[in-house]
Image (cartoon, rainbow, N blue to C red; front, side, top):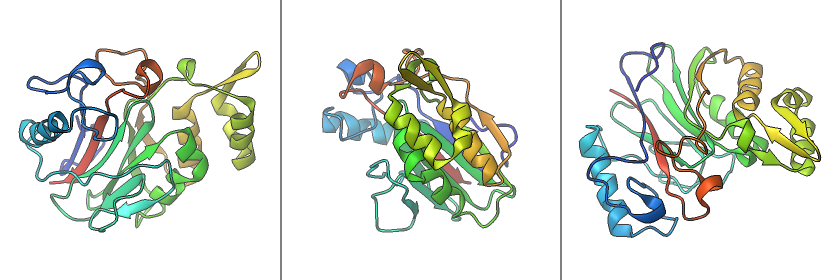
Length: 236
């Protein structure tokens, strides 16, 4: 699944919830790729090997310890704690995992620099999009949104809404209010920030992880023991 506007030499993949041969069971059924949610670790290891062989990846992805930070790593870094990763090297697979948060794929026009960011509402507030995009050598980037929770299902409190508009008053456009609660369109919030950074070529943003149960894991729908999808990008 590579968006048509991305360079032909860039590989891009969001994994499905189900894959023939997947080993996870229960809430993790059946292609969970995360080790931190309580799934059987042997099943996860099997799924990660299946990921590489089934999708013919050039290498095992660099897996991150994601903390909703604003840390963007180079894929060759020995560090693994962060929420975005970039590379200029062929065959290096950048990855994040999600179960409602927004995965943001990015590539320069020539396909010589690519990356992926994990942008939940906390990460957006912490500045992960800004730190991710500013690591690229140019701003005329191609961006694609993977599947995330839609506004209908992303209810937050007034205190979080205030943090967003304190960050940038324009982010008010990403909210709708219902009673004392606010609903955040995480896709729109990301677009506003990306546009301010000079990124205009954006695709995706029409999926909902909560509602499309057969396709996606969802933390809000299934709780802490939800599995995780992986979102991968690399240069062939």
